[in-house]
Image (cartoon, rainbow, N blue to C red; front, side):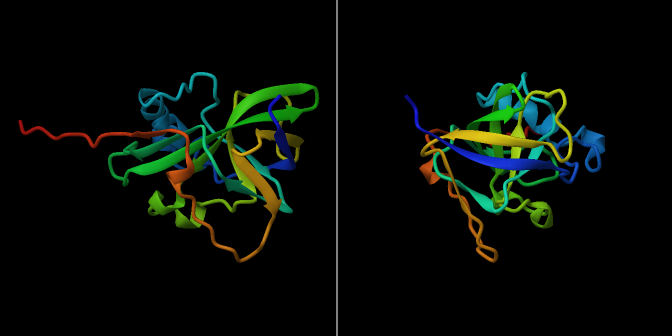
Length: 181
């Protein structure tokens, strides 16, 4: 039997960029724009809502250890630099529902121009199907396999950077080639 770890959290309002609710409406949000690139690189996205479920797990923080998948050099927007993303399997427990989902982790070192929007490690950004009844303030539990991520007490002021080197899988999107007409 697989050993698991748990964290309890509360759904909070995000920046609205992932869903396109408040920012990047012209592209339908970042998840919508990234979706086809993720699928091309082997991550099925059909079951996930085009936005993130933001879960505050304070007084804990999320420490990535070994991702399910890491996608490198993803050029998802023509005017933005390529980014790296890691994904971690989790299960959301909400009331009587148990739902498989993914922690979505854009690597901060490749998120040029969004530094002020990068959530603290006390906030999990989760890709999940639309879940009936979940709203801002909902309490839920997050379950993850031991060794994939770790939850530990939040230490204000610590700056951490995620390195993809501990990941199980690496997939790199090749830069698009330009042809002259």
